[in-house]
Amino acid sequence: MEIRNVSGKSEKIVNYDDSNESQDGAVARGNWSGKLEFLLSCLTFAVGLGNIWRFPYLCYRNGGGAFLFPYLLFVALCAMPLFFLEVAIGQFGSLSSIATWKLSPLFKGIGYSMTLLVFVVNIYYNVIVAWTIYFIFASFTWTLPWSTCGNSWNTPQCSLIGQANTTSNGTVDYLLKNFTAYKIGNINVSVDVADNGSTLVNTTLRRVSPSEEYWSRYVLNITDGIEYMGSVQWKLLPCLAAAWMVVFLCIIKGIRTSGKVVYFTATFPYLILTILLIRGVTLPGAADGLKYYLIPKWEKLGSFKVWGEAAMQIFYSSGVGWGAVGTMASYNTFNNNCHRDSILIPIMNAGTSLFAGLVIFSIVGFMAHETGESIENVVTQGPGLAFVVYPEAVTKLPAAPVWSVLFFTMVLTVGIGSQFTMVQSIAVSVVDEFNLSNRKVLVTAILCIVEFVLGLPMIMQGGMYVLQVMDWYAVTFVIMIVAFTECVAVAWIYGMNQFSKDIELMIGFKPCLWWKMCWRFLTPGLVLFIFCFIIITHVPVTYGDYTYPDWAIGVGWILAVVSFVPIPVYACYRIYNTDASTFVQRLRLLRMPEPSWGPSLEKNRELYISTLDERVKRHVLGQMDLDSASIPLKQ
Picture 1 (cartoon, rainbow, N blue to C red):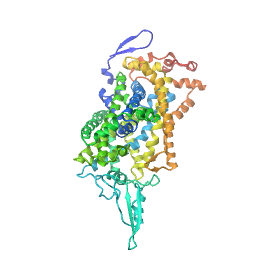
Picture 2: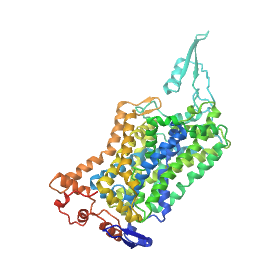
Picture 3: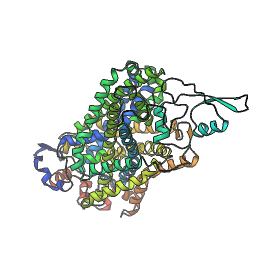
């Protein structure tokens, strides 16, 4: 392979053979055994639950096919540039999300924020995986438990099809006990007095599907609010434990195990989605669902909200800003074509979202046909789509348990794939930062145990309220701040010229003007736009009709602040502890990479040093004095 040396005026071609790369310094940390493992790992991480239950709903709500225009535009302007940036710095330094910020010590807090963000998300993400495991086991029966209303957890509101008018005779006390206490739907009550003096209560009840009651009254057994946490749902405890055990086993040996697991987790969901799509499009009413999903409603594009939600979805589905992408790229060989990967993977991820939408809306159309309701009343987002709408839909199909097992196994595979990648990124970050390479398994085990324990409140009766608070506040604000800051740190502080040279050392050519414009202006500008959109449209957390108390909202904000506060705090800490006489000199030193930053292999490191600005080179080689540090660097 040929690598172009960009130092000096003349260009020198260096013959480089990467076939023995793993025999050098990189072997201690490890490399992917093949290029396909990296691609599949990134795809496994990026394709998550949001592709299945969030994107289809947003697409429907925001103009159907018209929503694809802003969505794909933001893929090009945000997802691809950020993906390229994170892959490039991870691959160049062979370091994970914390240690890689040796490239600009002032901004190392970005790595800590990424790690905290993923740590919090892991806690509740695996609870969703635990629900999925429970539904898989519940599906192994001749009659699905959510297909009928004659169960102990059902109420008189339970009805299979259409609007049910259910009359219940009894006392007012009976009514209050069985309906009001559970806050179920709208109840019209009329009271009559019989000849014998007894009170007759006639109630007309809003129809509630058996799948909805199974989900809320049996699986969650949900309470009236976060103030009433209730007890642990013991049926969910072994599912949560199993979810964490599977995650641990997938990454117990680092990329040696996860690199093999991804061959299954990245491909199996597509097989199941294809099977479900073939079945879905043959159902009555499927065409109506697909029309609602795909037919463009161009007038929606005039709404500021549509563009904002399209941009937000990029960060939920592409995996940028979380640190895991850079961590996975750190196991690439130095000359892996990260430019190609950064285009291919976001496109594949966006295509998966669209494909999953076809599956979901063919089923949604079928549900609307079966119940006689409009599609607007059938469509929902989040857990309601996966654990209420689809389970109800499969009860209408022949061999319903088979389709239920297939669907939830697909959801499990997607969830586990994203989860073990995120957990691995934390474990690797800790190992790299604190030089614990001999204790990877122990670090991973402790991490899984701690997050399992922290997830226990979310399998209590009031656990859904806790999960909603964490999901509402833990991700959105933090990931915008992280994405904006990393663009500034790399493009403006580390320097676009040097970053371009680094990329050229790896792949043989510099990034074109388009990428540089995105990193410097377009991408950070759009991230600011998204952040402003979030602030403007933000409403306090809710769950259904439940309004959270102020203290719970306050906890959510604290959770968000804790995740991004390492960025300014660490910057202040480094400025305070840097050995220089003036504030300006400290900033000049901290904007330059640490001497240990650069390629892990000596032959690549020599090429890197030869490309550095003279002052940075002297700093890296330990020859800089404070006077020269105060001279501005060229960008």
